[in-house]
Image (cartoon, rainbow, N blue to C red; front, side, top):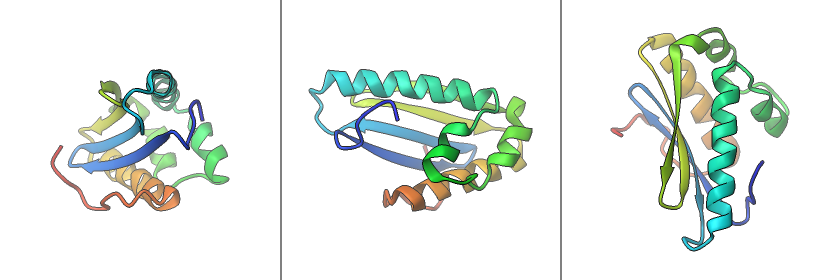
Length: 125
């Protein structure tokens, strides 16, 4: 990862059209962690957009659910990085129902594997 796990918190959200990957600095005054998060999520969004999911495969030692379909449908999935006051998020969305289902599978896996406690149900953004 491009930032400290001890100084940051991850969240994964599921939305009707996809979801989001969020990282936040635990200390709102930690400018270095905020910048590292923003740079890392820009990098991850670019990798995912090109169909490169090596980072999650290395972290989890296996291919997360949803990745094969996300690779196949990568041209129908949008990855948009948005800065937040404490870090950033990658908003992942699609109009293709198969892509959305794959995004949900991927994010649910992340919630379970990282033990974030985030909701496994689809919510409003």
